[in-house]
Each structure stands twice: as C-alpha cells, then as structure tokens.
Image 1 (tube, rainbow, N blue to C red):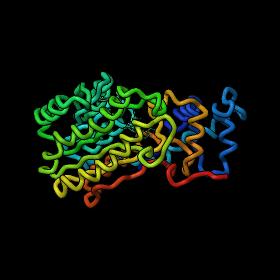
Image 2 (cartoon, helix red, strand yellow):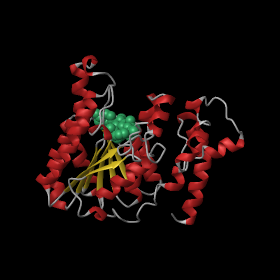
Image 3 (cartoon, protein in one colour):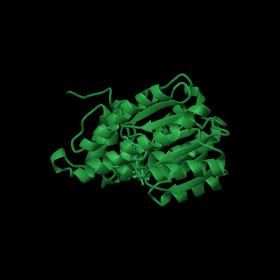
Length: 322
Ligand SMILES: NC(=O)c1ccc[n+]([C@@H]2O[C@H](COP(=O)([O-])OP(=O)(O)OC[C@H]3O[C@@H](n4cnc5c(N)ncnc54)[C@H](O)[C@@H]3O)[C@@H](O)[C@H]2O)c1
C-alpha cells in the first residue's frame, strides 16, 4: 500500500472502526491471544458499555483497513467492459468500484434503484458506469444489458454474476414459491446470463466470475434453497469453463462471512459466532471479495479457469472442536 493510501486507510480505520465495531461486533483482532480482551469490548459481549474508555476504543479499531484492500491495479481493465449483477449493494457495489478503479466501464444490473447511486458515484470519480434496472431472472434484462453495454461501451468482456436471494427457513417451511424465487435469482439468473453472454465473451477472450458461497460446501440451518443454488453455481462454473474455454475463462468465488447490508438481519450473537469461526478472527469486507473477483477477471488469472476460490478468512478450514 502506498504511503498516502496507508494514511487514508489508517484514518478510515480509526474513524470507521468505532461505529463498525460498535454496531456489528466486528472487533478485528491481530492474533488469538487478544481475543478475549477485544471481545469484551464488543456489543455482542455486553457492548452497551465500553470498559477501558479510550483503551477499548483502540482495541476495536478495524484492522482490516490496514491488512487488506490492496490498491487497485492501475489500468488492469483499461478498454474492458464489465456487467455486474447485484451491483447496487455490498460485494457487487465494491466490485463495480474496483473494476472501475482499474479502468473498466461497468454496467450495473440490479432490481434496486440504488444501482443508480453507485453508478453516479463511479462517474463522479471519473469512471464510466451506467445502471440498468432489471431482474436477473428475466431474459429480457440480459438482452437489454448486453445491448446497453454494446451501445455505450462497445461490448462486454467481463460478467460478474453476483445477485442472490435468500429466505431463511428449514425445508419443511420453505414454500415452493420461495424455493423457485431463490433458485431463480441465485442460479437460473446466472444460467440466463451465461446463455446470453458467454459466446460473446469467448469470442473476445473474456471472463466470467460467479459469486457462490461457503454454503456450497457446508450446511447451515435454514438455507436449503440457498445452499442448493450456491452448490449448483460451483458445478455450473466448472461446466461453463469447460464449454466456453479456451475463449472465455469462468471461475467462482466462495465468500465466507462478509460484512454487507445482507448482515443487517444477523444479530450480534451470530455475528460474534461467525467472527470466532474464522482463522483471521474477523468478518471480511466487500472490498476483499471484490479484489478476488477482480483478480479472477483479470489477465493475472490467465491460466485459471474452472476454479472455486474461497474468500472466507479461513472459515472453511478451521473447526473448533474444543
Ligand atoms: N455477505 C456475505 O456474508 C456473503 C457470504 C457468502 C456469499 N455471499 C454472496 O455474495 C453475493 C453478494 O451478497 P451481498 O452480501 O453483497 O448482498 P447484498 O444484499 O448487499 O446485495 C445483493 C444485491 O443483489 C440485488 N438483487 C437481488 N435480487 C436481484 C434480482 N432478482 N436481480 C438483480 N439484482 C438482484 C439486490 O438488490 C442487492 O443490491 C451474493 O451472491 C451472496 O450469496 C455473501
């Protein structure tokens, strides 16, 4: 990280660390020996009070701002055009910013009007972005997005399939309509995007990156359709890699616990549990997943296709049996 960026990051870490730590229980620790001390300063552990005053404030500084978010690689996507689904929020918005910072023009596809805000911010920062409101389950959305990308920027080189839907309920309480909606957004939507765009990507030497989840590998209660969709995405990525290579590369990322608006509905105790389940002892940031997506979409990953990359702080490799 360059000195100027480090200064900004340090400032952000201090300024943002307080509210983030306070509202989310995301006390980021360097090493497990500090766990108890830091955990005592988080709301999930009785965080209405802040033992230690200023000292406790220091303990909840969000160190992810120091440890992550490598600078965008200048010009890695110059002349490239990307479509990002679910680009209005969380990982999709971070990916939009990252690809744009590295030179790509980006078309955001989302059902949320917030997509326009993200696109506007990219444009204000000197980038090229447009928002296309639409549902990934609708084939016409993909037609319109492909046409918009062609008209505005000259075609599509990169597709990031990232939108999803989740209703938390066990299988016997999941209605067929809910199942269809979740599979429709998270899995069928990706198929429709692949169907519309992969032949073109293959002709242009493009790349697709699909956002799966660690739920593809592990069961967590109340997520039957989500797990099925995310598992399906890992297989689908491999399949598409085989079918559309060597022209196009297709890979997927499997995020672990990443602090996005999707976590608004997760209570403090569950957040703290998720933090403890990681090796790196913290939640991840959307920017950290965006960096992995950008890597897989970039020429730096030119010999990688059909891969499934976990971005989970070690959540999937550490299980505490004590
Ligand atoms: N946040 C995590 O902890 C986590 C963990 C594992 C995997 N993931 C995956 O990362 C991806 C992004 O998640 P996030 O946490 O950033 O979520 P988010 O809720 O912040 O953003 C999801 C976006 O998808 C959009 N969307 C929903 N349905 C859509 C549809 N039918 N068509 C178009 N857009 C639609 C939403 O409007 C929203 O802007 C998802 O695929 C999710 O499964 C997230």
